[in-house]
Image (tube, rainbow, N blue to C red; front, top):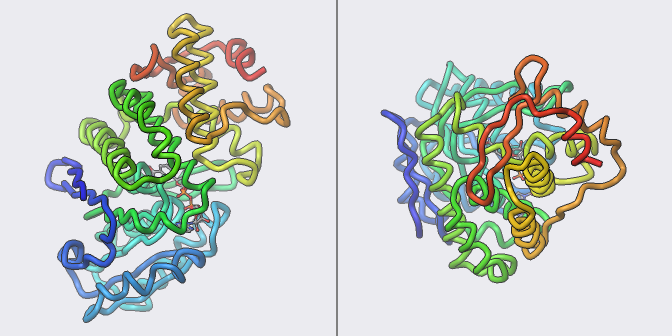
Length: 355
Ligand SMILES: NC(=O)c1ccc[n+]([C@@H]2O[C@H](COP(=O)([O-])OP(=O)(O)OC[C@H]3O[C@@H](n4cnc5c(N)ncnc54)[C@H](O)[C@@H]3O)[C@@H](O)[C@H]2O)c1
């Protein structure tokens, strides 16, 4: 097992990573401070793992709220329903929400925890690789609005993250690979040694071998924890974690969130960001090629579908949260492990790369 500590003044918490952690309730149960627990999960994950989690909740007053499965259910209306479920169980200020699921469940359960009585505890039990390496760590919570993804939310840190790698056994291959894209992203942004390690271990990671998998999750979490500790609310450095996201979100939105997965959008988006960096003279074609080769070895897409016109994608990119009035602000890089925020990127250059 690996432990990564997220160091935040007065609100530090552990990320435990390893096989069999869900059954190891002696470890995580002390994180529950009160008597009320609401487990938030979805209709796919709960039948697989809710019983195992429930064994660790013996003696507490607990209930579950199951969301329908899918990004389209990450809505305000469902936050209201989770809050109603807390109300029905008479949850007090020391209640705890446990998020059992992927990033969609985690983002919503965390947002509900931020709202109930202006903030109660929550514990993340991520069940996808993407949630283990990214969404469960760092405290970003929220929902989508009809106008855009993740537009409403709160920063609310969990009390603990319990990443049981056994739970990945049932994760479909495409979802597993999408999680690997977020691992590559961390290395590509700020850790060239980790990128080289991933190149050395790509084949065993692609086949889900346990040891390299745990090490990859821990290294990515450690990298992210460092960034979050330095810039919790994204005033600066934390924005780097969005490498590939402006392109990726545009691709996800253009495809109505049903064509590609978030992690696939990040993979293609990182390649587009690398190509743009190359075009602007910031990085070399060799850097782009190393990225493409690694992503392909992990089974990830590196080319966007030709279905969406570059002008449509550019219009979607203009809505990104990182932009300031009237100019595009993108995360680009100066090669492997050296991402930076670039403002005032010319739209013609973006269009050229999209074409
Ligand atoms: N808060 C953050 O910092 C952050 C970071 C990255 C992504 N996100 C968000 O995370 C979401 C994507 O998360 P995701 O990729 O985990 O998607 P997801 O939560 O939709 O899960 C993917 C699919 O896998 C299923 N699933 C989950 N665990 C399973 C398991 N163990 N076995 C079998 N099936 C399982 C789910 O039911 C779902 O169908 C997006 O909404 C994105 O915006 C948030």
